[in-house]
Amino acid sequence: MTAKSEIELRHLSKSFTEGRRQHLVLDDVSAEFQRGETIAVRGRSGSGKSTLLNLIAGIDTPDAGRVIAAGIDLTGLAERDRTLFRREHIGFVYQAFNLVPTLNVADNIRLVLELNRLPAREAQERIEELLAAVGLADRADSYPDVLSGGEQQRVAIARALCHEPAVVLADEPTGNLDDNTAEVVLELLDRLVRERGGTMLIATHSARVASVCDREVEIHGGKLEAALAAPESQ
Image (tube, rainbow, N blue to C red):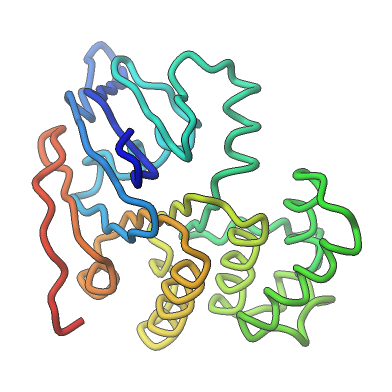
């Protein structure tokens, strides 16, 4: 891995069985993403955007090739070790929020910190800090079902960043939000990740989301297309 690379993909291939057919989603993909960089991953539905994120997170394993993320080579790691890797080094933001409905806002975040064995007092301080950062300091005791979509996604952002992950993976993070709310959430996510020096990959169809990123890559026909520079005006 190059000295400042946070993620390196080496000759990565992944296919899935659909009935009697093999569908090749990623075909000999190689790429590097630098520490502190934000990258938009674009492509049509089914092109492999989510698959790429899942391989980087160690949720899926490749048919061939290697994934090196946060200084760890995931190749050959047992499932338990990949789970521990995700718990420590990866933050997730999903389109569907994925909050635990039976836990209040603070406890949705606390769950991640407990899994990482952060001391209770430090965990509470971090929860308060992040809820203030996302503008929800007064909603710590609220449950997800009484929050708006934008509020739920802000909680999800706080949860994704609470353990200070090296890598943030966002899969259509504004896809369930109206335009105005999406703009607020996008600005918040981008700012908080950059402030913390994280590397973020955002799978998105949205040109607006892509415009805040440092560069874009596109998955087409199983290949990762050459990077495109983000517009300077952005």
